[in-house]
Length: 206
Picture 1: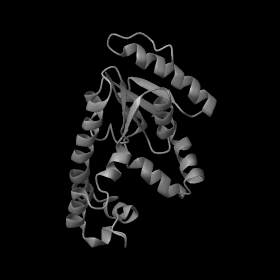
Picture 2: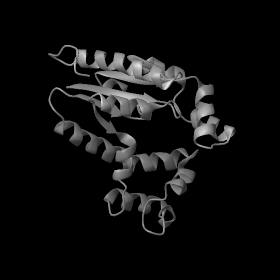
Picture 3: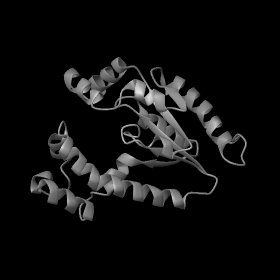
């Protein structure tokens, strides 16, 4: 098994990379999806969040009100760490469970937005970083997600710097170009990943 960490800043197109790797045969473990799963309605994770922040973080139907939580923790270090203490251990436990169920010769890609920020780079055989210039991030956040420019820049600034992510990278995926450019780069990266699996050569079926 080859264990890969995948990360990238907000607006970098990391999800597009993740989907393309899954299409080529990777077992993708999406930390964002798991973070939703572990605080779904009826879970002990959600109960802990409510105990920490009050019933105001719930929607009328008992789901976690993500915008409300976001407002509480954004810019509040103590609140953010409290939330992370509930979510992160559960996400990691669930990710480990999924990984254990993967085939022994799989390429397992852990899609982790805050991989660098949470100091996880050394936990993987290699780290893939999806990279775009900051101005491309801003453009995508304003045009594709409808953010105001100042909000987009605040979101970007709240994450690791571009230089910090690149310093953690074993493989860089430039995603500032077209989707065709991205597909060609993913083909290259996938060939490299499959060649790195212990006891395997390049996957000619990809």
